[in-house]
Image (cartoon, rainbow over all chains, first blue to last red; front, side):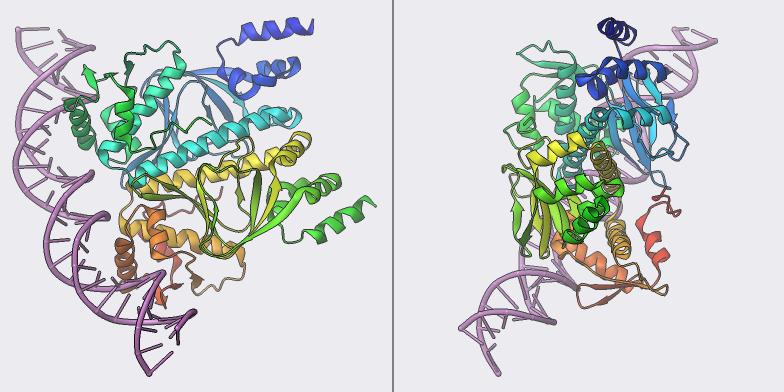
Length: 248
Length: 248
DNA sequence: AAGGGGGCTTGATCTGAATCAAGGCTGAAT
DNA sequence: ATTCAGCCTTGATTCAGATCAAGCCCCCTT
């Protein structure tokens, strides 16, 4: 019977990544049930703003499909992206009631949301949810620090190569079937969004993408479809340590 | 009796910030006792390296006194600071066995360490430790994102002003007695370390500090002692939103 | 088919910070 | 007292990326 509940829950929320990443690895039946009761979905169109920085935010959420960005903006309009949310990533901060960043859908977006109050109560009673969330937050912190090295010390070319490598890698982990010969993916960002990610202008992004193409590091099909014939070659351009020590 | 244990523990570890920040806010007696049993102290001299990136790291720790930095280094020597640890800050990552960054003592440093294994076991059994750690990690992530805006979009002058404001603020929160007239503090970093923090060269740091001095935003006494006659004036130079919305 | 707009590219020029270079200051060691 | 080393400042020059500017491409609308 208990096992049956679990399967039912699983069917109800089979596509909900929070099940898998934040909660489910060691979930018990009644915890799933609790999550089922408080969750709801929201959809946004490409370009839509999910929340403005400073707005009241009474839910936490997990990306189901699509891509969202976190950005910070200065009064004079300078923008810096500070987070890129892919499917299964978590947004929102238990214990804070206002959004600290603008959250924008860069593609059509579906999020699985949980009202903050009940989610927090659930966290109290099910310790490994907090632990899973801690793990995810520590991963994000590591990514942020990698990003800081990129922003502070890398050249424009290295920045572009790094971003392409990051997207290629995350993309590959989502669609496990990757041909050995070459990696292929669609850029989910405009040149301007790439610039906001990298701390550059869109013109510089465009020039450096062209340069990588001219040098044979990548091939372009249209403006957005990227082919990386040799991933190691791309990695050489990033300036990062060659040994992919990012997975220990 | 239970209450007595707590006081005893408190005396044994009166100066240990993890007690206050990571663990203690809702601690119970036996948790404190557990912490007491697995903790130990380590001291480092100014300039000493605590851990090299990639080294095995079998403890987590909390800064008791002094200042430490986290830095990342590229093969060709470019360096970027990615963390600045002041007293009560936490280092180390439950669930990872190798250090991801160089940790260096910039002043004489005392850390309160916990062997990772027992600490992790303790986390399992005492849920609000994980919760407190999550809160601290989320704070750090926010700081990292603020830092990303600085690295990606601020001018050299804004970077310097921002760093001075950050240090002034954190300093003020440590020694609560701050004169209304002006804020005064010692820079805990060399020009080169400031440069590594800000993604600049040491020459540019020096020039911009001189410029802020010439413009009356700060006064220098020696190379390290800073006087900020008007904190609001300094804040104007940072490029940040004027409303100090960083504390909600 | 014509028009228009959003996203992108490419060229010309400018500029803020890096780089290269030469001292200066201060405190510790001889 | 002198020397030395580490840290800092300041000047001259260079250069990577920003800014300004023009036009292209592609898709959508009418």
